[in-house]
Structures are given as C-alpha cells and as structure tokens.
Image (cartoon, rainbow, N blue to C red; front, side, top):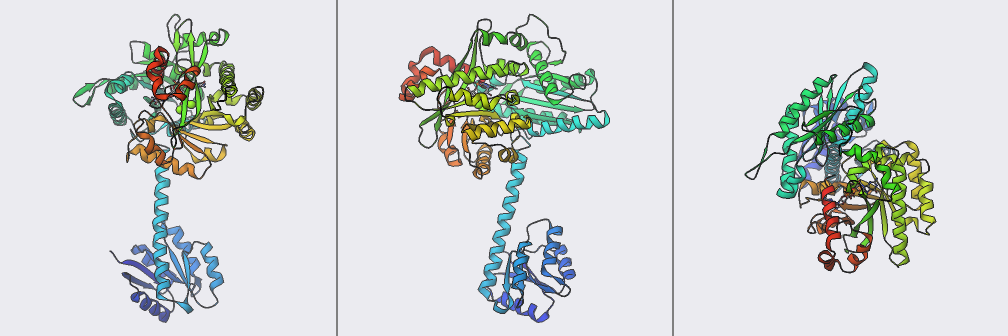
Length: 590
Ligand code: C2E
Ligand code: MG
Ligand code: MG
C-alpha cells in the first residue's frame, strides 16, 4: 500500500518534531512534510498531493481555520484537516469544525492510537465525499444525456430550445426545429429483438453526432423519437437541406448480426419564428409535419398551417375527435400493477382506447396528442376519470378494492377546477381518495403553471396519489420531487424492458431508487417484458411492477378472472385479450 501523504503545519519547531515522532511510531505507512506557516503550507499544497493535514490552531498571526478556508477555496476537492490544539483552544476548535475541519486533537493528550483513528477516519471521509460527488455527477449526466445514444436527452433539448427562444428575444436569432421518428423501428424490435433495436438507436445517435454542426443540437427524446435544433437556420431551403442530409444518413442500412437493416426516418420541420413563437407551438407544428411526412413519399415535411383534406391522417382523426365523446366511443382497458415482493395485484392503470365507427380501433397515441392540441382534452379526461371511477365503484361493491391509476395530460393541469372535480368524482361514488392515483409525466409537471402545483397539493392533501409517469425520459430532476407532492415514481419502460444485471439500465434504476429513497415515494417499474427481471427489479428497489409479461391491458371483465386464475386466463380469454395484446404492442412504441 502506498504511504499516506501527511502535511504538518505548526509554527512551533518542538511541537512539529513531537508530532512527527508520534506519527512515525504509528503502524501505518506515512510520508511527512512539514510547514511552519500558512504561506509555506500553501506552497506545499500547490506543489504536491496530500491525503490529510495536521494543523496547529495558532499559527503566528493566523489560525488553522484561516488555512481551512484557503484550502476550501483553492483545492477544489474534499481535503481533510485535523486540527491540533493547545490548552484552552478546544472551544475554538469546535467552532473550526463548523468551518469544515474534520476532527481536532488536543496537544496535551496526544496518543498515537487517537491520531491513527483520526487519520484513518479522515481518509474514509474523503472517499465517501468523492463517491458522493461522482454519484451527483452521474445523476446530472443521466438527467441530461441519453445513455444509449450519448445524445442530449429531452431534458437538455428542451432547455436548449428555451435558451434559443430567450436569445431570439435579445438578438433576433432564427432557428429550425426538426422532429424525427424512425420508420421501421417497431418492426426491427419485433422481429430482431430489443437488442437489435438498441443497436439501431445507438448507431443513429452516432450518425447524427457525425453530421452535426457545432451550433446544432441533436437529441433523443425517447423511444425512436429524435429531434434537432439548428441554430441560425432561417430559410425553408436551409432546413430542407439538413433534413435531406439527415434522411440520407438514417436511410443507410445498419449491420446487425449479418443482416443489413434499413430503417429510415420521417422528419417534420418548423422554423422560428415563422411557424410558432413559443416552444409548445413549435413542437406541436413540427410534430404535425412529421406525421404528414410519414404518410407522404418524401421523408420530410415543412410545416404549413393548412392540411390537405381527404387524407386519413391524424388531422382527420382530430377533426372527428368530438365523436369519440358524443357517441361514447371511448372505453378503457386496465393493466394490472403487482407487488414485486409478493406478486399480489395491488392496482390497475386505466388506458383509453377509441372504437371509432369511422376509423376502427385507435390507440391513445393515435388521438390523445390531437386531443391535447384541441380543447377536447379536458372533457375527454373527465369522461375517462368518470369511467375509471365507475369501474372502481363496481369492483368495490363486489368486494374488490384496487388502486386505480388515471393518466392526466399536461393541458388538464391548466384547469383551475381540477382538484375540485376530482374530489367530487370520488365523493359522489363514496370512493376513498387513497384509491385514486393520478399519473402525470415529468415534462407535464415541468411545463405546468404555478396553480397546477396548488391543485396537486390540494389533491394530495385530500388523499389522492400523484405519480410521475415515464420517469427518466423527461426532466429528471430532484427539484420536481421536492416541489411537488409526489407519492409514486414510474420508471419508464425504456430502462426496464431490456434490463439485465450489471447493465447500464440496472445502474440507472439503482440511481433512481437511491434518489427516491430520501423521499417517501413508491417506485414502480413499467414495461416489464420479461418476468425474469422481477427479482432484480425488486432487489434494485422497485416496489411494484407493470408490464406485458405480467399482464397486457385488458377489459374490466377479464381482470377479476385474471386475478383468480392468472395462468389459465391467457389461452382461454380468446380474441378479446389477444387483440388487447396486439393493440398494446402496436401502441407501446409510443
Ligand atoms: P403510459 O401511461 O406510460 O402507459 C403505459 C403504456 O405502456 C400503455 O400503452 C401500455 O399498454 C404500454 N405497456 C405496458 N406494459 C408494457 C410492456 O411490457 N412493454 C411495452 N412495450 N409497452 C407496455 P398505451 O395503452 O398504448 O398508452 C400509451 C400512452 O398513452 C400512455 O402511456 C399514456 O401516456 C397515454 N394514455 C393512455 N390512456 C390515457 C388517458 O386516459 N389519458 C391520457 N391523457 N393519456 C393516456
Ligand atoms: Mg401511465
Ligand atoms: Mg408510462
């Protein structure tokens, strides 16, 4: 083992010598450097790396505390100082500890064992402090970069977008926003497996980084969704040239286990300020163009405010959205949430579907975004809440008490009467508020107005649970945990579905679990696609789990049967459950 590098700082030659002798008698390997003044100590500290300093309290016209302050401001790393005090200095030494001195020893009773303990303790302290700093750094990276592709994540991307908007206010800067969605990604995942899917994503991350100019930001927003922010691009032609370059780069096949897989991308383009003056509008417009691009022969589309009539596209869906409510075409499937410790069913999540007489069966991703852009999201959400609570009431009357989770869109948080309406919906059915869990995404929390915070506090005080959905894909930040009355965190399936021991995902789950430990919240793993993950997830700190391997979302009638005979249900439930499974699979791409 290497020697411990010690620095003794004392202006009294005799005391220094005494301390040196004591240290040399210890059964630890030490290398000692001496300094007689603060200036000398400072010079030594600048020249070489020490593990610990033993500092006299009185140093001529300065004190050991002055040295501690100096070290703190100049060294930039945790560094332990053990203060050695003369008679009568103990009181000041205690004060010095408040300034960051690790320990103090009295000169009058210096014992070798005591010094040894102090030195060894201080080294452990440094190690802990360093690990803590590294964990913070890792969490910080996790909260800003996507671990699979190394690209900025949603978090950092939105931050840059906000920055760009702020800068534009000052100097008239322009930029283009690209929203990108991979074309055949789901097929790669389904036919070649998730590992192949991950390879494609990582490779595309690499390609985007390669073609990125210094002023561009390319990010992975989640799933197979990417985005680009092109600073300084002020013309449609400029943005289109970049979109074509990106299109070519992502059309080139990826080699996977001897196969060449061509995936391709659809790109929606919105320019600032021509196509929107704020982040929400720009994102919605680029998104809308992206969907149009998916249905066109070109792989990109620049936003135009007019959409072509007669096409079966999300905009057609959005213009008939009212029918979903008027004709009562919405219905719910329920996905079980189980305890990872006991396997017991603890609750369900209500997931909406639309059986449209016009378009057939639609998944939430086909119409919720359109509803969110329209004023229909509020009535739709309250209709869904009513249906879910009505089901809770029916189950309760049959003696089955399950927690019911309902998803809330960001827009609904704007409704000032949210808390009141939720509480009314519960009390009119005689349901305990504790049985309801409202799921909100991090990004929705982040973009919500201040009165949303009050509404959530009011709901939490009434007993309703608040869950952060898709955690890890948005603004993963301790701040929100602190500011909002959170009772549950659902870790996004991005980290769960391909979880393996000792993988990066496992370490992410472990970090989230460590992070949530300080707050009184339950941790739920969503998107568990293999039952083998369950023990590991439990070990990593997840209390509950949800996912296809446990159960697909299913109609209410099937749920009770599922609960009483899980194994026997799958084959006998027939077409209904299988189509639920197919729908869930189709839409799980997100
Ligand atoms: P979410 O709240 O994160 O719901 C979980 C989604 O993941 C569901 O998709 C579910 O079917 C899917 N899923 C569950 N287990 C697995 C798994 O093991 N693997 C994979 N790949 N996927 C799994 P669904 O039903 O298509 O819903 C998608 C999203 O649509 C939901 O994500 C939620 O954000 C939104 N949504 C659903 N219902 C509502 C609603 O009533 N209101 C609002 N505002 N949004 C809703
Ligand atoms: Mg949810
Ligand atoms: Mg989720």
